[in-house]
Length: 121
Length: 110
Image 1: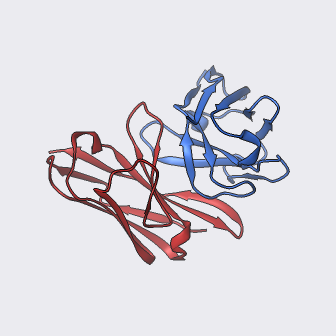
Image 2: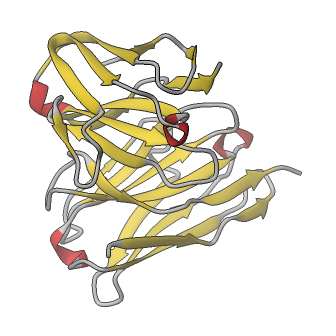
């Protein structure tokens, strides 16, 4: 059974940093692109970033480009999201999701339960 | 940039009734690039439909997707108690690579 488990969320001050992790199991991690999606309180889903199976292709939403860095460690079946220069509007539940493709975005057939990031002083 | 507009924002229905949810794209998109998800509070989103009309693994046949061009629909023929949730449409594009979600439709118990 495919599973994704996020961790690393918490309360952080504006301007601070956090590193989110997503541990994958039940599938060959390196064969699929992986994506981060977030949901702010009371809002809908927002795509954040995608990384290809090899890590060589990376894409960001305009709202996070330059502040967020996506990466992956295929030897440890783990996806990461480094979030820097945190803003109040980054407060959200962050989900990792498995793409059905190797190299680019498509649809997502497995999602984690999410990890909550709260930005507040 | 493709914008997806879902309607209605909220629909109130009773178990056993039919639900029809709409997703309109700001420009013509390929059927292959449209997916639907179900999301319950506190849970992981679940893939329902991809390629506009193909049910994902394990999705019951009371869920169906249709549409083309700019207008897409997901229908639930007979609502079960577990179907009350928020539903999102999603577009995936390649030029440039991007993902867009609609604003969601909440299906609530009447």
